[in-house]
Amino acid sequence: MRTDRVLADIKAVILDMDGLVLDTESSYFKAWQMAAEKMGHHLTDRFCLTLSGLQYQDVERRIQDYCGTRLDLSEFNRLSGHCWREHVAVHGIAIKKGFFDLLRVIREKNLSYCLATNSLQQNALQCLRYAGLEAVFPLLVGREAVAEGKPSPAIFYRAATMMNHPISVCLIVEDSPTGIAAASQTSAQSVFVPSVSPADADSSALADFVVADLKQLAEIVQLAGVIGYN
Image (cartoon, rainbow, N blue to C red; front, side):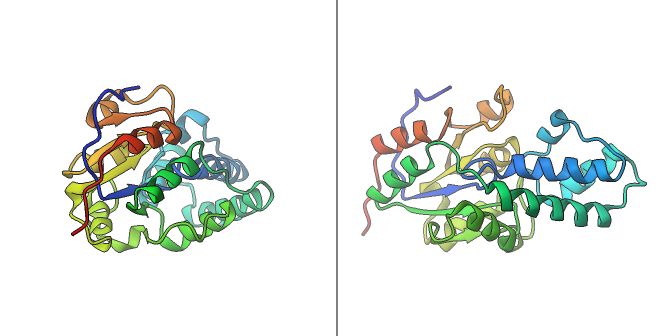
């Protein structure tokens, strides 16, 4: 993992949700696989990993291409939603390692922070409730807040504006190639926390930092400078 660079002064942290703060992606993959099986199709684990970080319209298109045009997307969405709710009602949604370490450091340094996700806000809030984090984030920017989701960087600019900071003083933290591709189009510093191993080489090259988990990122942010407020 590349941690040899020095994190420059920052005022705010923009976090992705799925696969970074919450282990939601494994529950999505399970639900999509269960729904596909009910409809006579099979989604491999390897294929599901290629859907990481995508907005749902792109997920639908990939699944349609994979299963064939005869797949009834409306029925697939209904079944997968039902399967997902059943799964998380029993198992909940796990919080990724190191999140609370990072949250503590962010708060100690009085940094602004928010979630910026390709999920719709209503769905993201539901996930946070299942994980017990519904009261943690002062700001959640969902997919509907911008015209284009990631890999467009629009959602990061929107998040920075809503926190009253220029994007240049923000740190963007992502776990997927899609998110890092979006972050690389801004002047923010970026951190890649790969949710899939081995880490994508192209994404690693685009990011300013590559770390194993949020606990390691917390240590880097702890040592970083903070731009003073006027």
